[in-house]
Length: 384
Image 1: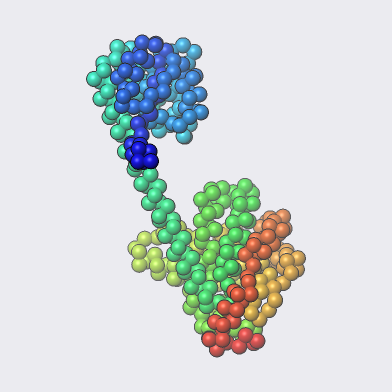
Image 2: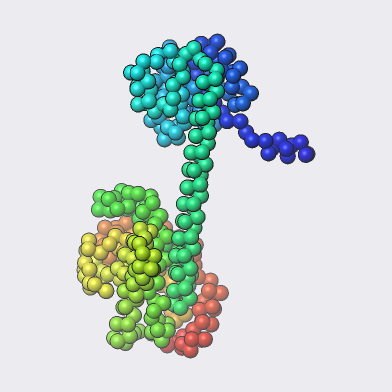
């Protein structure tokens, strides 16, 4: 058992692929490098490509230039044309040492040349140098990826913390956040190749950012007094005016955070659009700016459909949720007035998937009990 543990801790040897059609050269390189590195050897360019395709990537390739069928230049060209192999360092082994030959090799992406006949000292030194450089590059890439993941997690935690804060003061439950962000993602993925939206939605990172930003759509409700925010019945005109201020409050909260940081945060661009404009309507009758048609950001148009659909089908303390079919009819009736007509066509195709999301994240009796308890403590009459 102890021996196995020690072996597990032994550093693995870097792997070098050696490609040369001369057996004596393969034997020499094997003798020079075999104790320090794990070697894979072949006498053909085509076989080398098969080895790379069907096994773990090597840390370095020693590649003969002059070979029958496929020369080293062509092997290099093919490896550098593919994203998963383009960063493997390649050292050419060749008797062709003219300036033109070297230039051609470097233009194809090689990192070095070793002239034949092979000098053992030069071979050992240059292999070690490029293996070390490659390992350092991999380490830096892994470090950057780790830091990027950490930043992404921090962003996600921050967004959900802020969204949950808003939710605790609202009639909605936390599942409203989950449902609406999934509706937005579903719609966006469906529309990513649509000619009206592909310029915006054709990047997967954009769709993922919309998904992560959607929970902040009602962050401005934190600034609305409980007596209005939690009122179970219809608003009086002056109350509705106060309620309509929540998009501006949400935008200003995000802008204030950016101002404190001293920079504009790209990640929050769509959060600001969604928070400020998801109550705009296609015909210009919405708020806060009365934007119409394509002047409404695509992100906000997606959010508008998601938010209204969920408001219709969701149970509230003071009302039962509407049947899915009836909610769909109301959304469709808003085509061209409340909602973007082309997005509604997509919604019609996806309405069963919307319903599936709603059922997956349905509010439980425990969720509603917590809301009722909160309202009682806030001295709000749940019966209106």
